[in-house]
Amino acid sequence: MQEAQNNTTNVPQHVAIIMDGNRRWAVDKGLSYTDGHKEALKRIEELIEYSAKMGIKYMTLWAWSPKNWKRSKDFIDDIIALFRLQLSDDGLFARATKKGAKLHHIGSWAGFPDDIRQKAIARISGEPGKKLIDVNIAVGYEGRGEIVDAVKDIIKEGIPASEITTETISSHLYTKGQPSVDLMIRTGGDMRTSGYLIWQIADAEFYFTDTYMPDFGPAQLEKALLDYSGRERRMGGDSKKY
Image (tube, rainbow, N blue to C red; front, top):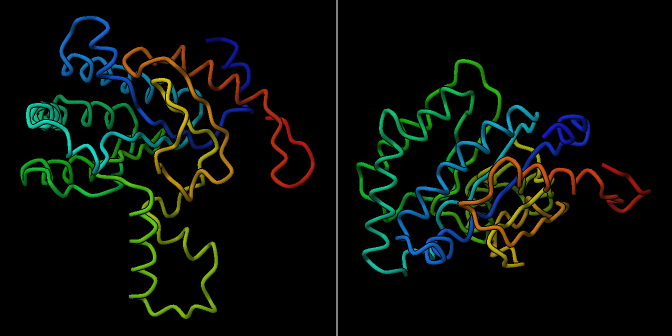
């Protein structure tokens, strides 16, 4: 990973990942869906730690969409059990905080049992001893819903239509106060954004990979970072190479 470390000036400030392919990975290996999710959780912890070392300041990970509630009861029960495990004292949330990650939740815990909502709020309120990276955990997240919520908040505040700007919208999103996404990654082979961070990825570079999330670790992220660093981004003006 030396090459990426030698290009720290080209590291994106905000990386967002659509984590896909857990179930297909498990099927390919003759394992259960739960095994696929557990392996992906290992990669998440590695990616957070690696990103912090690389100087990435913000990471957003899409863990659960409202559409996922349409899946089988057995699948949902397994996911809820995994959330309980990761919210425990020695789970992923606590370990990430100890390693310098300030966690944030974007989305809604609606549909999850009360104990999970309460534990999640407690875990996310925790502060790392020394903050190295901000990590948004997108659970119950849907991009259009985020914009609808932002509009509702603006209306509640009584802001006149003539005074609403792009900055007004940005300051009412779940990610308010954070920079827009520089690099959006999707694992698992699909080449679409699925409504992920619609507003925040307007000027982002996209990186699609066939690698399933359980196999997407620091080495794969390094490839994405190197690809990003070689791109020229005009942003409506002159060429700018990152």
